[in-house]
Length: 171
Image 1 (tube, rainbow, N blue to C red):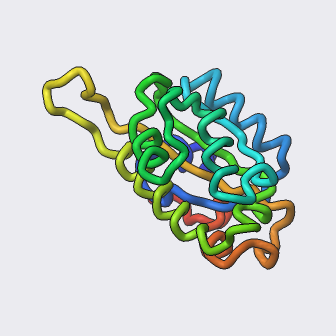
Image 2 (image 1 turned 180 degrees about the vertical axis):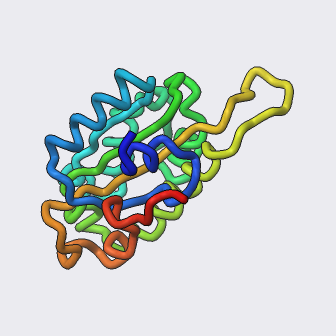
Image 3 (image 1 turned 180 degrees about the horizontal axis):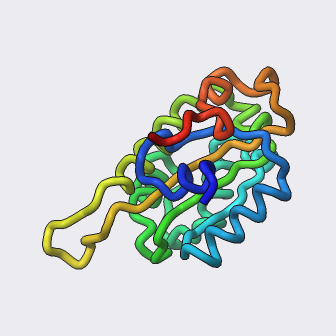
C-alpha cells in the first residue's frame, strides 16, 4: 500500500487535500478504491460547480442524493452526513479542475470547505448507539485536483489545503 493509499483509506485528518497527480493516475486510484475496497469513489468536475447551485447539482447526482434533497445548505449538509443509501466502506470525492470551483461565487468557498470537513469528520467517528444506524468509522476524503503543481491558480482557501503528495509519511 502506498502512502497515498494509506492516507485515502484512513479515518484520520487531513480529510480535505489538494493534488496535481496526473488525472489518469487519479482515475486508476479511484478504480482500485471501488473494486478492491468497496469505496464510493466519484470524480466531480468543478467546471460544472462555478456556483453554489452547481455544487448542489454535481454532488446530488454523483452521490445519488434522495429526491427530497432541497438544494440548500442545510439539506446538503444532511445528505453528506447521511449517505446511508450508498453502503460504502469509504467515500472518496475527487474534484477535477479545482481552479474553477465556485469561480462565480468565490466568497462561498469557505462555507463549502467547512461543510465538507464537518461531513468527513462525522464519518470518521463510529456510531455505536444500539440502533440500525450504527456503523464503524468510515474514511471520507475530498481531494481537489489541480492542472499543475502550482497552487497559484487556486482560490486562497484551496491553495492552503495540504498537498496529498507532501503529507509526511505515517510514523
